[in-house]
Amino acid sequence: MLRSQTKLMDLGRRLCRSIGNNNGSNLTMVEVDDKTGIATLTLNKPPVNSCNLELLLDLNESIKQIERNGSRGLILTSSNDKVFSSGLDLNELHQPNQDRLIAFWRALQDMWLSLFLSRVPTAAAINGHAIAVGCVLATACEYRVMLPGFSIGIHATKFGYVVPPFILISYLSVLPRYIAERALLQGKLFSIDEALHVNLIDEVADGKSDAIIKCAKFIGSFAKTQPDARALTKRQTRAQDVQLLIKDPEGQLRESLEYINTPFFQQGLEVYLAKLKSKSKE
Ligand SMILES: CCCCCCCCC/C=C/C(=O)SCCNC(=O)CCNC(=O)[C@H](O)C(C)(C)COP(=O)(O)OP(=O)(O)OC[C@H]1O[C@@H](n2cnc3c(N)ncnc32)[C@H](O)[C@@H]1OP(=O)(O)O
Image (tube, rainbow, N blue to C red; front, side):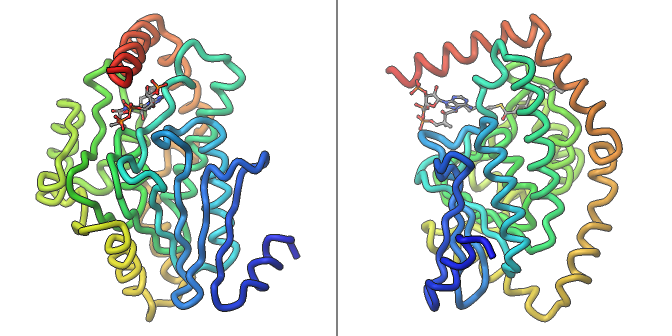
């Protein structure tokens, strides 16, 4: 038995466990509620949960741990009270070391598959902005509860990024095609009212704990289903969505890498990163 599992049992009624990455940096944290058996998975990479290689690997490992530990559900949230996730860490894409870029993109593909196909019911308590891949994390879950005052969406086209098919699919698994297409082409970030109107989110909460309660209630709605039957039915329902990535992950990787390495992409990214940095100094 792993030491962390023994520790988990020792904690008795207040089951609470943190899972860090290999160097112990706690980029994600997992807490299991002993009453409901639901795991809360918290993104914890300051300042804005931008997804670098280490966070993606850590996140994937936490998703798998939650499944292995027999949790009844997974609630994804953030330790930052303004930002759920700012999407991919753009520094990973800027003038990248090619070996690291390959590892990064593989980790992104793997993590998305793990979350999108997770055996356990999944819900996102979106307690801050969910930008680009931040939105993709939320839409990979089965249910979304969001706090007012924040934005959610994929605005990649505004900055000259073409989105890879799995990002498109994550939008299409939640939004009707014409809304997804228009939002992607406009690079639209939705306000909470707009997101609710098109069902990009399912509910609004008045605080993080309210969001967690609402997510737990959604997960509780599966209490009377048989977990294996539920998991297999979910997998079948989502099978077509993941076909491309499962059948040809290396081909998908190659296409993305080719695009990221183009001078066009790199120049656009350079300008965008400079704007982002100067904004944060204002
Ligand atoms: C065919 C296939 C093709 C495939 C190839 C192409 C890929 C396309 C798909 C792309 C998917 C993505 O997710 S791309 C990621 C897109 N994400 C974004 O554009 C988010 C940009 N960020 C923001 O809008 C804001 O930071 C926001 C999240 C709202 C938080 O605002 P705040 O005022 O609270 O914080 P800020 O001061 O702006 O940010 C704090 C610091 O974090 C940095 N920072 C913020 N977001 C960051 C990010 N995503 N990556 C790196 N660094 C980031 C800032 O520069 C600051 O750094 P310091 O100055 O050092 O303090």
